[in-house]
Image (tube, rainbow, N blue to C red; front, side, top):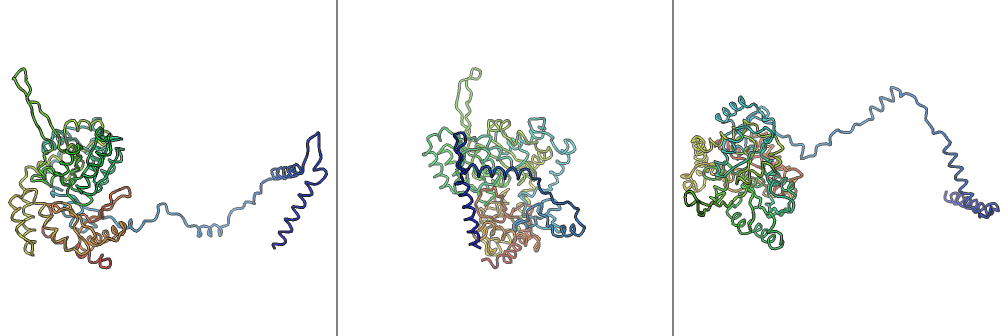
Length: 538
């Protein structure tokens, strides 16, 4: 085989050599030397023209027989219109068939609901339902426009005024969606070139606002004040332009991704030392923390603004006061769906801060305004929180029943007796604190959240080292708790766009509407589910 190929190659070379050495290949025509290459090129041109002149081959056409059609159909395997589900996506999300109160219905079965942030148990409250019904009869369902385009209704203004009065701030502004509040407020104030120092554990809504602002983002370790101070010190020293830029610290009051509470007093101290502004998200603390539910600022007894006065001569009365307001917290935002049993969000602060957002905040300018009945529900919920004695009484009863049962089993009674005399909305704190005594005994899981947090956050004691694997184990626990024990809990599943790298966990939202039996049932269900799922992983 190789020798025949070699012979063919030698023959071809001989023919080419003969063509180049032939007398006619070395002729001179009109003074132009004609070499053998001209002969070869002419030959190739003839071949090309011959090929171009040929008609293309068309095989004879005939219709397929029925047998051939059947064979092709049997062999054909269609591609899926959507990609196949991965293992982590095969988990079936529970579908609620009733209101998301302390108890709800899933697949026709009543379950205890710890997956909804209904902190004060106001979901389905009679006064809220009555106010919503009256609002629907008067205004209809939707507002049908943005706030700047005939979408402002009197109940929107009433709700903004009610929130500002409740929190003791000059003004407030409503947003139609709780998540959009922070990621609209941040880019309204911080622009390209500005500096934002933010906790690495903030939720996705804040992360999106940081991205939209196009500012310089610097993260510090989660809830670590030493890391925050080092970060602020480094920014101040290294950047000569930093003093001329707008600089912000962005934190959550109660972190959605860990249940930790931000040390606001220390943050204020660092803010004043390094001359930064503070943006505080109180979505999980508004209506919960503080003696009257006014949030983290009341919990730490930090005034939102400090007012000082000087004297000026006035022509009419002789003197007048010159008022100077210094903001301790520059911007406060919160989602109203966690404690007020409604939807939407708000931002509160000075009049200058609020008026700026009315023309510069995308979520306010370009979104349809909050449905009027939801604004009415928020006003009614705040009235209940501030005035209704039934809510406080219910919270005290829950604490008394729960703690009496817990203290009967080797739990110190001193903390309960010392705190019980000061109960108010703080009763919810005791529900969470006492419940943690039971949750600490769950095998394979540990409580990562703050003792005062209304959201209990459970993480794996022994991580697998993979977020995907950890989340799968937690979802198996949640699925087992629901299907076998009738307890609905939720995991901290995150989007691929979420930059938070804190451990994934199970979120348990404590509600004032939960009873002692609900708490006992949940702790036992999680213990059994954890034992069943994690028995081979510890």
